[in-house]
Image (cartoon, rainbow, N blue to C red; front, side, top):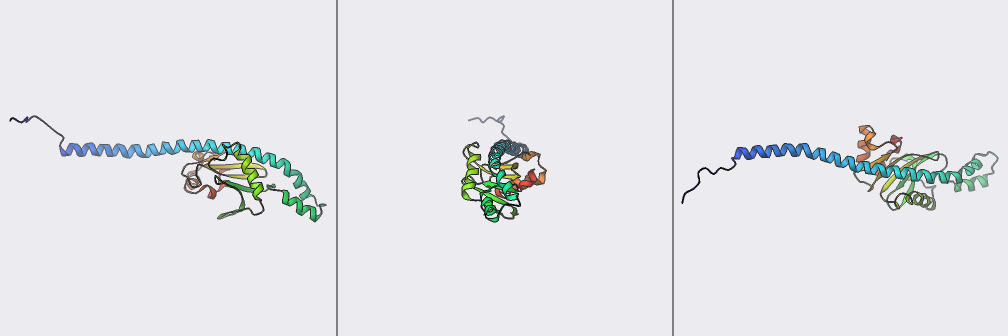
Length: 202
């Protein structure tokens, strides 16, 4: 039986060269691909953060209409102490600043002064927390995802949104996460939603 001596295959050197070229292509494509995936998911999260921002501002405005007359009573020097104490208990937001955190199940007003770690504002009742959360979530797809809101003087200042409390892909508003300085954006990406410093986003 005759063998065909003209039959050729790949040499070891040719295989090594092909594998090296494939390795270089993978090294170029994978980081670019992960960047585009991150950017796409963050843009989706930014859109959801904007939705929460607008929903929260609507609810905050509604609450402010109820509370501003109460603040006039509190700030009136002629108000007696009994009425003053009773009126203070009716105020949920007040004109100060606070954070509101929704973990996907429950909403909590956080003390803006006690930030390490963030602690719940004990003066806020569960009923009031639930009312604010429901007001936002009625517009925000029944409370999907996790978000944190910064409110100051009855105005929403900033929002951070993520599908999960410690998820990778977060969105922010009014400044989009990709428009933030690298150090701020990287800090937000690395930490859970509850630990985000919202004042850096204003």
